[in-house]
Image 1 (cartoon, helix red, strand yellow):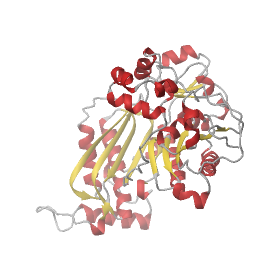
Image 2: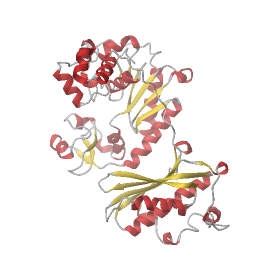
Image 3: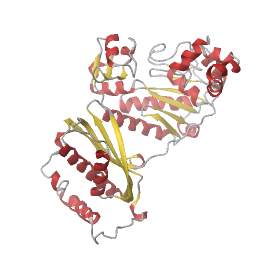
Image 4: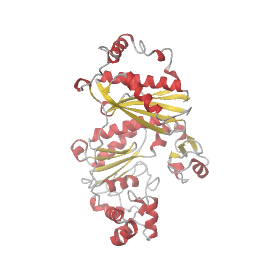
Length: 438
């Protein structure tokens, strides 16, 4: 059941989770006029924690914190842990003090990435007008999907059911005529709910909310608003704009005043799909040996370039991803003079990117090599070098591909990888191509 500016709440969770207080108390309606709620905001519920618990079903309904050691911060927390005041970004030491009974689970970024890609694929089944905000939330413009999938509320239910069935995690969906209201509606729907806010219900929906519920109001702005005696969105809406300008500046004041009345002209902007091919490895134990690191970069570069050749693609930008033992992740890129699909050239660029970091015996958990800016090889002119032999590395690697297709993987490979097993690696990324090529 969906209510008019209220929650579709099959689990009986109204009033729990992250939803802000002050929602209007109205009777539920079976038929909601949601025809103008063409903008949906889908937000995964405690995404990192939910994905982590897929491998720990015994921890469901218990307080769980996703994070590292005492000196790190909380990545996510389950709703039982949030009831103790634990929040994302909080120092782990403080989170443990607030909820000493919580179980701490280390992050699994590979799993998060896989589930996020699957969720985004569900969105793409609905519409091509998808604007990802992060790996756990996105805006969808669904006006073009109504004939095929039904009303916005029906589409929201289909998204929730599909993600829950296929991935085992839940999401909350807000629908409105604008992005800002849809964003606040999805927060009001948490956890595992749907909230549709038609235009005639925007003001009653927004005005009882605390000022901190407005999209874009952080702690500093909230403090400034409280100093002015503004506690609810209605207070902002009815305050003279000149007073608000003097306190917050013209741009911020006008923006907040418009949002307080539900006015938002920002449109859903589909993200440009980045075509890329990549490979990554998470090691069974952290590594810091420069020789082992170079060998793994060669292994990843060779695997990436092989996939490119099989797909008939060339690329110019080589991106290196390094994740350290404390889960800090950084990327560096190198742009080549001409597009390539040659393992040797990808490897040289990856090594150059790694050398630029200047690392000395730093323990590494994951390495990744990705090539971006892809074009079809048959339509891409490649300028050869004057000193290049008639038959070079590209021809040699194509011969290797032919041998591999006939005799199997590993029949021919670089000498430094012979006798070296990839079995030391824990989670090989076999997803291959990303973006359009996925």
